[in-house]
Length: 117
Image (tube, rainbow, N blue to C red; front, side, top):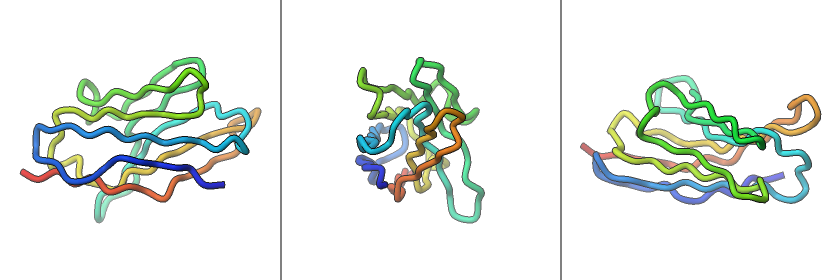
């Protein structure tokens, strides 16, 4: 099962980018969708997640700058990233948790976001 992510790229500090990720129909009960990121030499960290019911959780470093949303069908998640900083440079991974107990987890391949100073 492959999550289809789009967006990312190179932007100057203060700029904006938008990431999108679509879960294929073969994944049932996509309960939580979101994004994580990993910078070189660092551990993967939470960026933002959103449940099917609309409950949102942001990583501390992106609060107030990033906005996560989910389409009405609940199968596509978007991440609007504003006021980007060089520290946001990382590979961003789409994540889906599914199943009755959120015990099924899927990852996208990752998309590079580079913010120049």
